[in-house]
Length: 214
Image 1: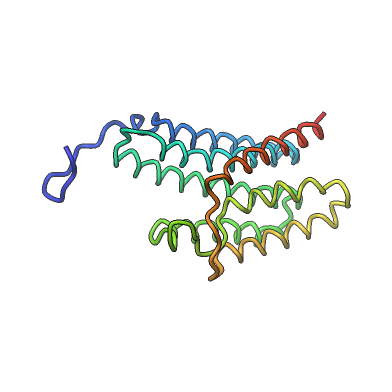
Image 2 (image 1 turned 90 degrees about the vertical axis):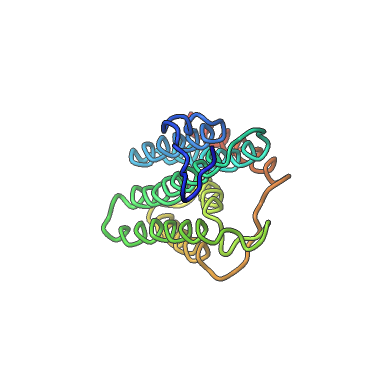
């Protein structure tokens, strides 16, 4: 029975929506982010970057799976959209903030930057949830998942300079990305063949960071 103002549909049990395949994929991304946060707290940034890469990968994958599935209800789609947005706050808001704080040895000087990262993430996602895309292939501002892609690339060079140098570089980059996330500029929504590119990128950098862990 469909919902209406006079006859709202009775929702199913909560976990009925969680077991939907695209939502399971979203939760796999959340698991990747939580593991990455754990390793970031430990100061193991190579392992943290692997978690970040896979958080991005699963974030891209859930939408593709959802679009290809047949028989998925509108309720499942709405639940999945909310789930994806909340997970994005963890993966691309809290997670990068923890990386910054941990790399800065939890110095008070890094707290404002961490707040900016999380606040901008929440503001951007709130805006997107209300207004959506400019059109089918264009965002206002830089999408949050791009922050993870760029951050994972930056950390490949972390060992080439001292932490005293890399820390401010990391801080500055994250502030620039935060500004771009809410900037009044149009950016493309990467999809289609770009999914194969992010898959290759994820696998390659996972191997590189795995090698660094040996």
